[in-house]
Length: 182
Image (cartoon, rainbow, N blue to C red; front, side, top):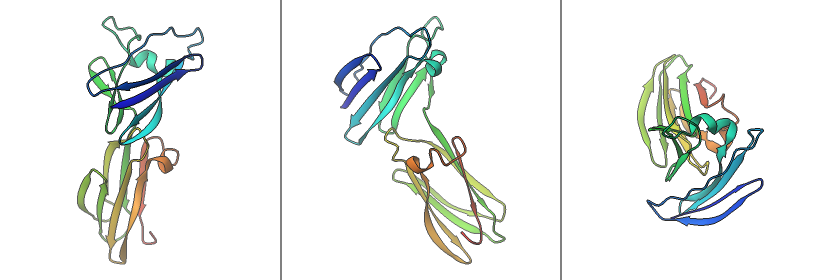
């Protein structure tokens, strides 16, 4: 089950418990200034979070109906977060790319993981890069950590933490360099 509580500046739509496979919807008119905003709080057994579920300036082109106008939005709540759909194609809310580049003269071995994903062991020669992409979960608890081994030693570092890096990285791209000093 997912418990949702959606609101706008003027309307509180109440608390609703949605069972797996069921849906909840509502209608409204966009204001003259195109500043209409609805936000929803989501609570599941895996966590909770709040998301701007409809923002006129963003969703007028994302949300479609059979006639091509922007008046029907669909969102799915899944274990890894909220996902929006425009027509048939899925649009991820936040996709992040992480890149690691070896700036040392010798090889570095890296092994990156999250709670759910093991990205395997990669040996990067000098100047070589390795990267991957993923979606940040609704609760902004996404964490990837990497073990690094070089001729000079090794260590484990949190390479991506959603709450820390959402404003730290350039847009949705986080770039890291492995150097002699760390």
